[in-house]
Amino acid sequence: MSEDSETIAADGPPTDQELGWDWAILEIFGHRKHAGRIREEERFGTKMLRIDIPVEGDPAVKGWRSHYYSGGSIFSLSLTDEASVMAANAPYRPASRLTYVEPDDFDDQDDRSDDGDEA
Image (tube, rainbow, N blue to C red):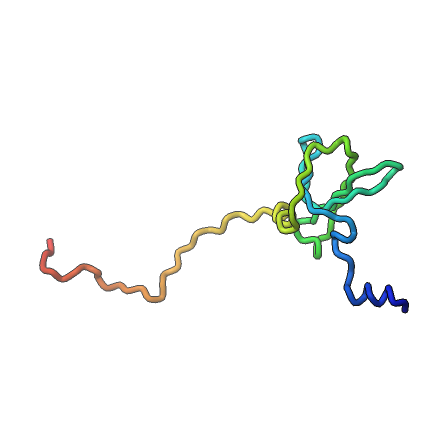
């Protein structure tokens, strides 16, 4: 085992930044919007933008979905952080229903004062 491979093994796998990934929100022609990790790759003899979108906001379990776009199709690109990307791709969760829970220290005694002014 070479010294370089020992160093890599001790440091762990490379991070997204070291592999050239950035987190971004991307709009294509103003009609499609994606949030994911991006990097530039060469495909078909030209430079293209690759965006990997976390499926249902959980790439560890569900994986990634990749799209490639040419530079001319990009309408807007906003750099962001990983937490924002995961939140943008999380499945919709409806608001929970309101349920009434009676407190444990509920006192059913009448709280009226005993000052003699009863109607």
